[in-house]
Length: 167
Image (cartoon, rainbow, N blue to C red; front, top):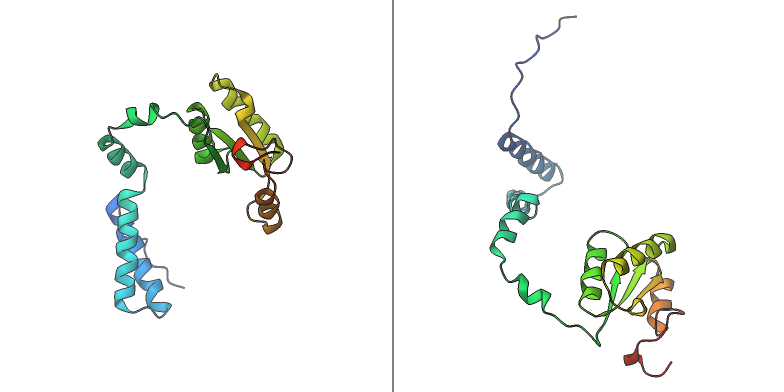
């Protein structure tokens, strides 16, 4: 059979990539039975997220945020916090910040080994009492685990915090 000659290669730029994605969104929306308004809304939602919720968007917004000294002055002594997914990512950063500010933190994690490792790393980073950083092994996607943790002061075997009443 006859073969068509290869088409000239078009250099891909961020703009052409965005246009391709928008075309796909509109085509998929049309095939899914969306109206033109729904396709436009999906495109606007995508573009807004692409502008504000990417690394570039974070850097732009972080440069405008200058009130970090207020966060460092917080004293959370006597307050109790439950942080899910506290062994990695943003959950770990939040747990570390709250513990550094003297809060009592319950780290709810799915894996006991990873939770213990994260707990030791957080304690090594601060000079606070290690009794105020408690790991609780539970999977928040399982109703039974959530009920067990919620029903037991201290999260199932951990010492009860003072605001739960007598142990």
